[in-house]
Length: 255
Image (tube, rainbow, N blue to C red; front, side):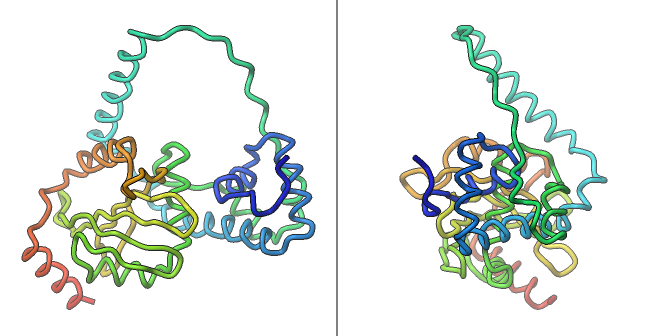
C-alpha cells in the first residue's frame, strides 16, 4: 500500500496539487505531509514553479494559436482518428472518479495557493506540456542560459538540477536565433524544448515532458509534437557548425 514519502514521485505530487489523484492516494500523501518536511518542500517547489511559469508564459495568452500549428495538429488528430476507426472496438469503461482537492493545501502560504488556483498559462497543450515547464523550473536558469549561449549542438552538459543536451540551432520565420535542446531533470522525465533569443534573453517557447526511451533520447510521440511546433514557426534548416559558432558568438557580444 502506498504510504512512504519515497514512493511519491514528481508526477504524483503535481497531480496531487491539481486535485487529480484518487481519494486513497491523496489521503496517503496527506498523512505523509504531516511528518515529512522534505515532501512538503518538494510540493511547495512545484507550486512556486507554477507561479513562475504563469508569469513567464502570460504574454502568450493574447496571441492566437498559429494557423500552421492548428492545421498541423488537426491533421494529426484526423490521421489518428482514421487509424482508430479501422480497428476500434467499443469497450465499457467505468466512470472516471471526480477529482478531489486535498484539505492539506489550505494551510499553505497564500502565494502558493494562488499559484495552484491560477494554473499554468500559455499554449493549452496536454499534461506533458505543463509537466515539461514545471520540470524546466527545477533546472538552474542562469546555468541553462549560459549553456544555450555557448554549448555546441551535440554537447551534453551537467547542470544544477539535471543535465542538458543541445540538439540543433536554427532561426525562426522572424530571424530570431533558436535552439532545440533536451533537459533531463534529476529524477524526472526528459523535456524536449525550444528556446528563442529575444531582447537579449532566451525565452522557452516550447516544452513537453516525455518518458525517456532506453537510449536516453526522447521518444517519437514528443518529437511529433515538436515537429508540429517547428512547422508552425516556420523553422529554418539547422545551422552548420561554423554558422552556429558565429551566431552564438554574435549573441554573446550583444549581451
